[in-house]
Length: 396
Image (cartoon, rainbow, N blue to C red; front, side):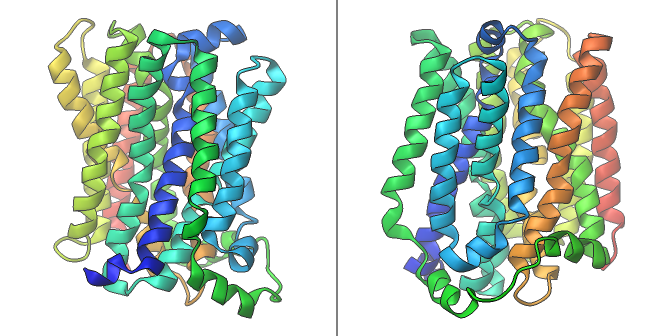
């Protein structure tokens, strides 16, 4: 355990947790203020799925080009710069014009793009193998932390102020964090940079590495399906709870926050269990199956049903659907060729999180035509079961 507390390991990883938490909160902000934002923009609430898709398309695109900057400047420095860009994007979002909708989503996605490759870059270079699954899970707690902050903070702020002020508060937090983490830049990464700055980088190498190695490709394809379920939680859970279950926004935000908040604990205990007690791919498979069951139950939940039962269901969904991503990145990093963890993570991120680009717009179109979130959630439940079975069937 003493190894984990070394400054070269702990400080950069903690910095990345702060960075990614804020980018996730920014990406989830629209979904936790759907009525207010959509009224100002003059668009349906379901367009939160379009915003999410643009964010992830931007993140995946910029993620292709992040390997060389990581080598040259270090993980923390790269993330500081992109976080400032994301803060500017959140400020632009408050203008409520068509161009600000698109440009702000692109800028927030740009801020999120380097987070997972940066985590792999640090952990694979600075941590011993036996601690890597736990560190990947700890780093990935940033995602539910960000979701929890969005679920609790944004609806609460709307009680006291406008949605524009809430977005500017998020922008200010991103800016402040970028500056106060300056002392924690990763020294080992910088030393490595001096030896590798002159090497020529292949932009398409991340995609090629994933496609060439069978187990990584199969894991990424299964993750694509299961992350599609996650995209629907992030983009549409609050809207579903408000529109069809008839909850007040603050209570829907509470359930959204509970799902994300409790998954922080899940990421830690799943990281401890992985490859020590249960094979990682088995955990991934079980998460998929439980996710499918949770979506079936949500789809069948009656309007005005038990709030406490919804809270319990949100907690189970959060543990299963939001708690596994760190294990996935840890597994593909473990299977990566020597020295290629950041590239493989960037590539698998493109395959897996491409689901955030495709699924929310498709779900939005479905809702606009079918006018039934419950039917959509039932279909998502089937996808969760398919992903779980696929994870369990992969052999390597």
